[in-house]
Image (tube, rainbow, N blue to C red; front, side, top):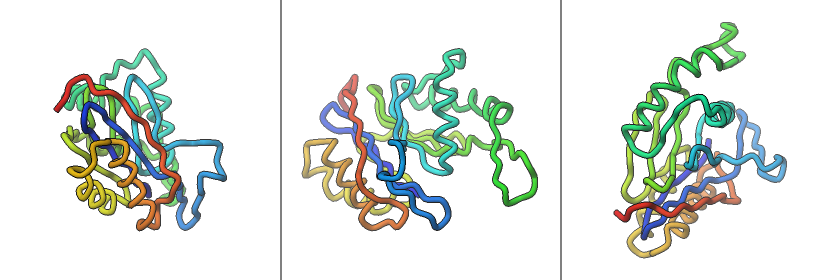
Length: 194
């Protein structure tokens, strides 16, 4: 449960998130952790991941392995990279859900839903490897509806991608019970203007 947003405007791309982690009905606010972030950098991109917390750690681990050739600069290249990731996730990583009695549960999909911001644009990748590129903004997570509404209301009124992204993430933190402040942001300069 999270609120993660991406915005592109005036030559900038911003990715932002809330900072609350939840485990069932337990809330873990940012003051109780060592700075774990729902947004992280790798391969020239910023990634915001929703879903099981382990998915972010798995993706960070894979991105740190230079022998795995991945590219996140376009919709098509992200799709190809996710196809490369699937056999790696299935063979080298597994999920222990503890509730099925099945032991090791392989990654049958990537199990990762994420937003990506980099100098080439803003993108979303779903767990079944579908990829979208956005021209204005988007949000994922349990606070998605609130974030989309806030960003829609402000996009044509504000010039700053950072202000729009902050407002979206804060709307999720304010109204979604799976999200909370503070908001974390990262900005990149876009290569080309849209």
